[in-house]
Image: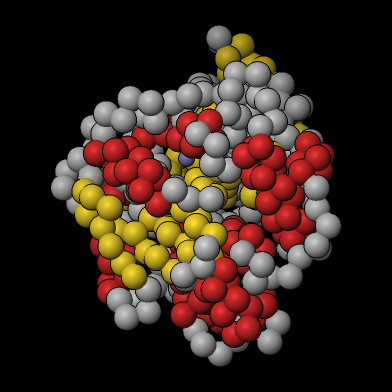
Length: 387
Ligand SMILES: [Zn+2]
């Protein structure tokens, strides 16, 4: 069976959308009780357990953690897709058996359960756990560090989401980005960075088949407070994954599959080109902040009491409402936006417009409608519910 077909009919359909919390994953973990070894690495600042899943019994120890930022759930969904794939005993049996013999894969699906519940980047105390590697002021940071020190992994996977503002020079969205974090200020290519770079090249080559030209390389400025940089500094190869935007996929149901394929290639389940070199890492295009969700180009609005022809960039704000994430459009920028691209582009043809029935517009403004003043035709409107 073709891998994409297999994935499409076998992904973890109990986890959908952007809002993924302990409440969603605990019943699934219960169902794996007899398949994988499931332990707790400690508890969060508000007393929630932080579960960890152990798969395989091989010599190569890999440690991954997702939702260190509570509102970044795509890689968590991909982890559960991976668990389901490994647990099924029908397809890719030979490859899976080899993976189980070769690797011991420890994964923490939600490192920040309090942030996941509140749909925030930070934890219950408002601390960004990915800036707490040095201080380790939070229980979650201590728990992760303890696991890191006791397991002595050969490889770490730091699993995140990136915002839809990231794109590449080729005008495509950065659907998946990777980083081999720096281990020092000089960004030296240390032995562990090299290993991470090489594995990124391996995954990038595999993903090119699925999302050609949509794979980026994240900025490698060194920050000792970031967990990836700190682990890399200790000499353990660490890879940052950033799950990003794919066209019209605000729920990130497509992107989760690309992260899943990346896992398969990393663990040699998906056969990849055997020749890859760490040097090719530098050929992966750099992530740029060059996208907005929507750009309405060349419309007339009133700015400082004067009618001005300009462009309006709109960014969706993710809001937790009734147990799901809604996307609320807000004005992100006004002006010449020639160097930015919109995931959705709207041409205003120099028409005078009314934003929420007003002639004026300002940055940060929530938007329900943009209509042409002349014939009242709808140029942009806020969709009801989820995108
Ligand atoms: Zn993050």
